[in-house]
Image (cartoon, rainbow, N blue to C red; front, top):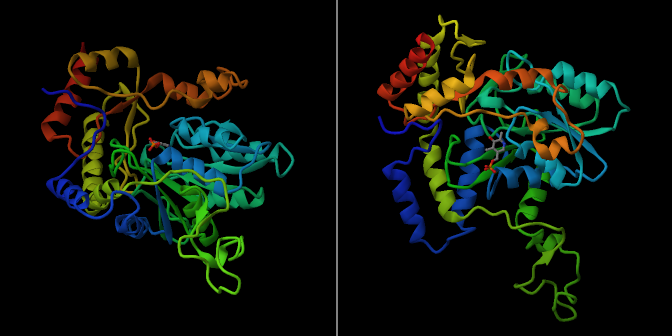
Amino acid sequence: MKPIPYGRQTISQEDIDAVSTSLQSDYLTQGPTISAIQSAFSAYIGSQYAVAVSNGTAALHLSALALGLKPGQKVLTSSLTFVASANCVQYAGAEVDFVDIDPKSYLISLELLEAKLASVPKGTYAGIIPVDFAGLAVDLEKLKEIAVKYNCWILEDSCHSPGGYFIDSKGEKQNCGNGNYADLAIFSFHPVKHIATGEGGMICTNNKALYEKLMSLRSHGISRDETKFKNSIQEAGGNPGDLNYPAWYMEMQDLGYNYRLTDLQAALGLSQLKSAAKRLDKRKQIAETYYEAFKNEDFVCNLSPANPAHAYHLYVIQVSKRLELYNFLRSKNIFAQIHYFPCHLMPYYQEKGWKVGMLKNVEEYYKGCISLPMFPGLEEAEQQYVISSIKEFYQK
Ligand SMILES: *Cc1c(COP(=O)(O)O)cnc(C)c1O
């Protein structure tokens, strides 16, 4: 058996052709493919606007800045996430505060979150960053009620959940990242995610002002829109009496960054997007197969039936003897992974006062979690090999 990773990209001949075509065009960066992927992605997710950026971490950083996050403010997020969800708060000079997970869903506990908000003066927290962990949607309708009550913005980390959704109280399907409840939502196009561009990311929103702010921050805070220029036509180099700015003139109005996606990456992403629904179905099939294989096994606990609303970025099971199982699988060329070591126990955050014992649910979760291979290119025989190897381990 060749090595089986926990996740990897699927690249088709169409994807390769799309990148080749893009290489022969006039643009390597910021050409027409950027706006094309923004439109196609917002249509796929169901948001009004989308801003393509260089990666998911840049998406988080720009989002925090666009939302006006400042030193002295605090933001709540889950400790069960990739560190970038929390780090964006620190980038803005603000302070992240971690909330424990619900032990059944592994998502941020809305009860504990509200208790934290209620225990301090209103205004202490500027925002909340919920994470659709593994691909399961946070109930943003409920979260929004809490956010409104405490005057917090919501930045949804949807890196795991493109194509995932929840059903709201009106019975309507709400896609992860669609911006109906969250102010902003971010995605990553890292190779293990649903859509791969090498490095890449996207921010979705229904808020026009935030969209415009993000477009500016993505590229140095420079504006080319003469209706918004702050310097006068003469200051820009025009002659007295001119009604228009010189055509070359642009101006930097905010401190932005270079967080642009290239046209090559956008071409790959646009092509990947066309087959995203098919790959999502494959992920759901894989989840179904794992569930059927393990539902009657007592070495796996807290197993949920395959869920059509889940985007299955990860397939996490809870087991005993996790380290031994992990090493056994490695010896059989199966590279399972652990998601995640709790964020609050990373040395950087421990230096800020976080300690073992502070968030019991996520610490307990970490002891037994293991992510099984889950990617659209996983062949049936490979998945059966993974399943039989796990069973073999527990029968020893
Ligand atoms: C992958 C990921 C990120 C960061 O995305 P990059 O593109 O790697 O910067 C942020 N949050 C979560 C939950 C992720 O899985």
